[in-house]
Image (tube, rainbow, N blue to C red; front, side, top):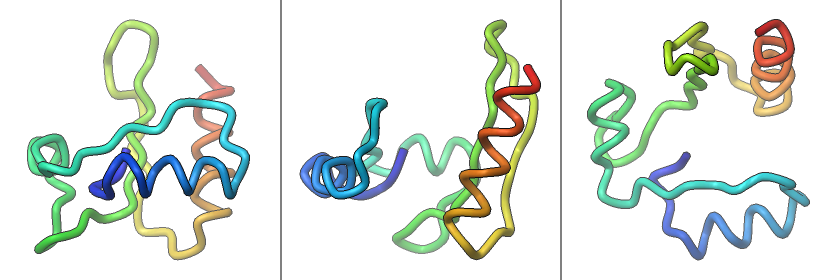
Length: 79
């Protein structure tokens, strides 16, 4: 999920070949609720949520998007 618009998300998905839906938080409501909104943008944070709806891991503080994605994938596989 990103605070970017749906159109920006669509272009991102096309450019990177995303095989899953992306969500837009253009009103920044979800970002505020999860405490990741910083001024007008959100920090890169991934919440890995188990099938029971419980947050199992929070991944943050990584600069490179690739490293962030790799860690998130590892976390999901460990569920």
